[in-house]
Length: 92
Image (cartoon, rainbow, N blue to C red; front, side, top):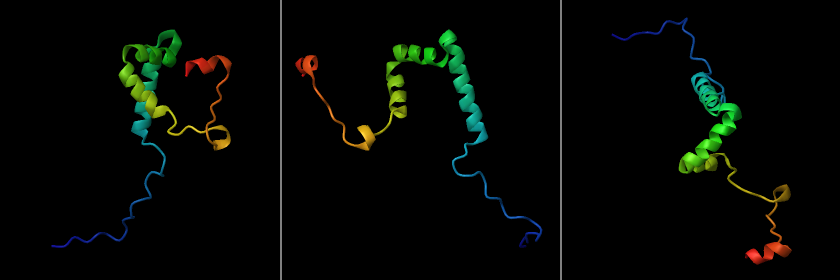
């Protein structure tokens, strides 16, 4: 027996627009940030992250690597220029 779809059934909608986060994901992210802020005491989120940098440097450095830019460029997107002056020359 073959089932036929009624003619008054609408096709699926376009779905969530590209780039808009899932509501559950957004709620979870907000909850995590709020928990970290509360765990940091008076210093808030920054205080919590400072503590983690000392107590858990490996995972903290991995996190840092994810939030740092992938490329470093000089002024106006040009090449990086390094200038060595007086006291700095002895460090090389």
